[in-house]
Each structure stands twice: as structure tokens, then as C-alpha cells.
Length: 297
Image (tube, rainbow, N blue to C red):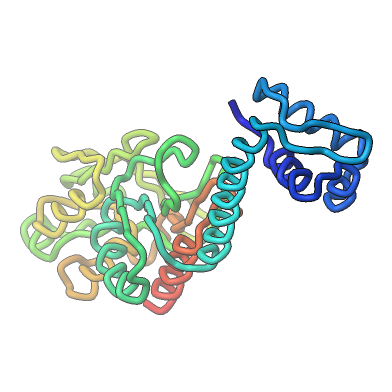
């Protein structure tokens, strides 16, 4: 059975003062409300707590026993509230993060090394998957996701502008030739990323105001963007990848962008969380850290 904290506070104060009216004034209650609260508490306990007279209230033996437990309970509650108040602004505790597979492994995971050194009280639990986490059901504090968001029930914040681009390794292009136009992709082995909303074998571009769609096919399909990137780097085919995912590969010339004159699909990186008030200090710190690093890099 649960007891109201306000009722317990009133009981302890009446026991200290021996006067219901005085205790009611100190707690900003009218005497009738205070009297009803004591009767409610006695009813819950199934015991009489006070011997009453017109001017004074004296604890019964049962009341004396309960008073010790009541004080212990109120002290524990005060200590717990004080502890929360002290830690409310501290960056510490478990931080459960969900991120796209490729970006999570190859960008966020290495990036988190310096973050955890800066905040040694944080324990990072990182899940890398291209399947969208349910923030109201899954144990996730902060999620990063690519693409335009359709679920308005979450709070979202754009972390970085981003596009998708067609990429291939120099080795693949030497062996199979370089496609001159998107329509030429039909003659090439394209690496298909199977997203949570369906298999993404339609690649979209814009050229000025003109929209271009190309259906692609290949002998390799994966629901993990990291696997698709590794296949592309290994020369197994042509991929349609987030530029944030392949930035290091492009810089190292392990991959090159095809059709640079075309604009690939907008694929911004967002941060999602259930409610603004649910974002812990650790999650806020990581989000600020990631946004700073992505914008700088």
C-alpha cells in the first residue's frame, strides 16, 4: 500500500507540535483538510495514531512505533531528492545511442573516444543498425538517423546537411568501365542497400530542375550500409552512399564519385529523442559534441 508523502509530513509535524491547527498552518492547510488527511492515513494503516482532546493530540503506542518509520521514510526521500538535484547537471551515467550502421561504426564510434575521455563518468552503449529504433519502446536515449523524417511524434534536430552519391572504386572502373550517364548503370553490378522502409534499388538525382530516377540491379544486397560500403571499396560494384559515410574513402581515393554534375538525393543526418525534457545531460553533451565535430569536418 502507498502512502501520500504530504500525509506523512503532516503526521510527523502533528506529532512534533501536538497541535493539529498549528501543523495545518505551517503546511498551509485548513484544519478540516488536515484532519481528513490524518483520518485517511489511520484508515490506510488500520490503526489509531493519536489520542485526541480539544487542545492537544498525543501519540498512541501504535503512533509512536509508526513515527520512527515515518521519519526514516521522509529522510530517505529527502536524501534521494538532494542526490538528484546534485547530479541533475552532471554529465554521467549510461547513455544508450542508436546510429546508422556505417556512420555509427566508422564515424561516431571513433569520435566517441575523445568524448568519453572528456566525460569519464559516462558509459556509452552504442547500437549500430540501419533499422530505425522505436524511441518509445526500445531502451534508447538518443538516435541518429539519415533521410527525411516521417514520424512527427519525436523531437528531431538536424545534425548535418548531407547527400547521397554514386561511388565506385578505381579498380572496379578500370575493369568494367566508367558509366557516362545514370542510364548506363543498367549495365553495371549495383550494390543495393535494403533499408527498413524497403529495398532501395531506385536511385534518384536532380539535374537543375530535372528529376532523374534509375532502377538498378546487382548480385549483392544488404541491410547494413557498412557492408555495402566495404563491397564498393573492394571493387565488387557501384554503390549509392551517403557522402558522410564515404568521406574518408573519397579522401583516400579508395572511392570516387560518379556523375558529379548531378545532385544526389538529400540525405540529412538527424538526431531524434522522445521529448525535450527526456534528453539527459550526457545525451545533450554528446549531441553538441557530434554537431561540433561534423560541422568542423
